[in-house]
Amino acid sequence: MHRSPDGAGRSRKKPARGIIPGLLMAVCLSAPAWAGNMDLAWDAVPDPDVTGYRIYIGTTPGSSDQGIINVGKVTSLTLTDLPDCMELFIGVKALDAGGQESLGFADFVQGLAQPFVSDASPANLSQGVEDILVTVQGGNFSADMQRTDVQFDDPDVRVLSMDFIACDEIELHLSVGPFLSAPGDPGYNGAGDTVEEVPPAEIGMRGVILTVPGAQGEVIQGDTPSSLRIDFVPQRTDIDGSGRVDGFDLARLASRFGSDFGGSGYQPELDLDGNKSVDGIDQSLLAEYFATVF
Image (cartoon, rainbow, N blue to C red; front, side):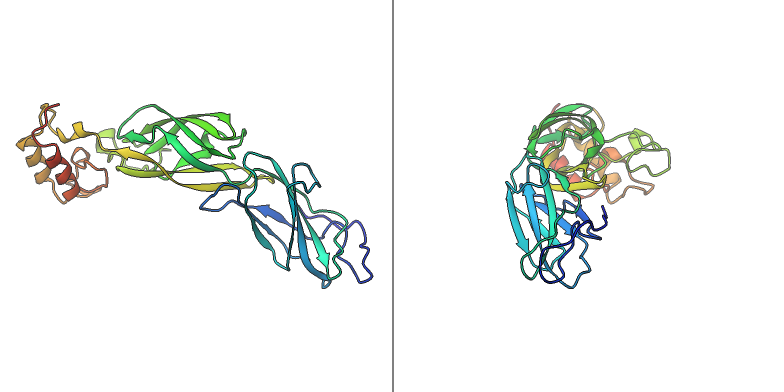
């Protein structure tokens, strides 16, 4: 985004010049992503007369209908309270001590404020579900988003497909592990595991990671608060498949108690909570459903 100067300023002193030389403006969305925020960073202009910068925020290139902000001699700024679901054009001009600004802008950054997730429905998934439709609501979702732009912070949750509904809504088809571990799969350990040898998805909260194309092809990422939960499947306490949780199941679990994933004694069907260890949590889950008939 570097441009060469194309004009002179109008200050009596040596002004900041036309299109600011060496000005690089990069928009990067950093965690946590809150509605209406946008982080800006640019290269300093190597001119001794530059005393600050002026930020133009508008809905068309060069406009300032969303505001003008004067800042000191800094090279970064977080814009706040920006309108959601509105494409914005952000430009920077250099200022001298007399308030004269450069004649031209650096290249505009064009895009939405940080994407965010406010709700997901249903908000609870289950271990081993093969395909479930989840509606995600929030804001600043891009129509250019693809399935690969939506990720979860756990490889046991996979996005099968994504549909852009509106700037504040997307629909996801999700599946939850355990998955067959194979080359190319998240978490593949190179051992050619079968699905029976792979730990179940760990129960607990999951966050959605949203990525969208940046103004100059860079990746913009907004990390959202945890919004989905993977729930335990009670039927898994019937370890031997007899239809009843009883002493045989307890004996199976006790025989491998303390084993960890990767060890010779680990059996994933005994790792009820999916934390890669057969431990007291699994014992507590089995006790909770002891004598239950499925």
